[in-house]
Amino acid sequence: MSKTTKASNGKAGSDKAASAQEAAQTGLPLFLKNPRPLDAEVHGTAGLKKDGNFNFAQQTNSVPITLAELPEAALYYPIVFTGDDSALPVVVLGLEQSNYFVSDKGQWNDANYIPAYVRQYPFVLMEVDNGKRLVLCVDEAAESFTAKGPGNAFFEADKKPTAFTQGALDFCTAVHQQHMLTRGFVEVLKQYDLLSLQGIQVNVSQGKTIRLSGFKILDEAKFNQLPGETILKLREQGYLGLIYMVLASSRNWPKLARFATLDTRKAA
Image (cartoon, rainbow, N blue to C red):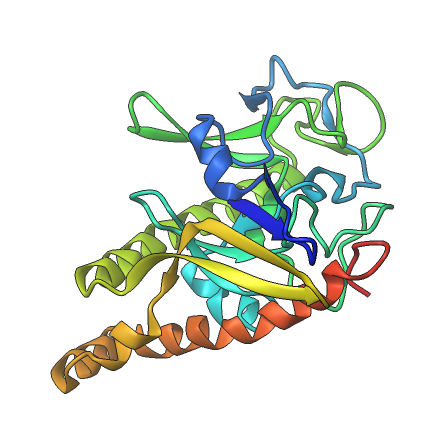
């Protein structure tokens, strides 16, 4: 997701902000740098430190969410869709390169919903054998990863997964399943041509605006033009309420603008 700022002197500048969409273009999921399948022979003494933080999410301005998260996420963040063909929903966390909801100490503002994608890190389910299997991977480059030492171990002495690892697998599996359901929702939005590639211009202070581009929005004007039978079908599919939630999430743009004017650039 790119942004352009414009000041009162009329000069404009632009830069790239880390986002869910840009991460997808690198071939690796967002945040992951060195994911590796969990293996008892390789990770027999490895685990995660218990004092983990969200430093890994400080320099991203958007994170993917799933269908089940829309109701909660819409209360706190603007929801847009990636500008590529997949057009998956993401929450916008900042107007520039930084995530306004993570403090300098790596703490997520506990007054705001934390997306499941963030909570599952440094774990992720990845496809192997040309998509025939899913395996639980861990990012060995994560700050919380430890090859040996105290923490939440991945495996017991008999090389069986610990309850901690099983919990991570269960959570990542649930996130993956919701991701597949989310694709179905997006396909319906695309079927009715409800996703439009547009930019958003946000006034952050007197004489200064930030324009975000490179993503799609749920087009309210096109939605309002849908015939009654289509609206009824969307309601029967369980999508109508979700559409209204995505549209309502636009009320969170002014909140991001307010955070952008703070010296610390962090959500209070």
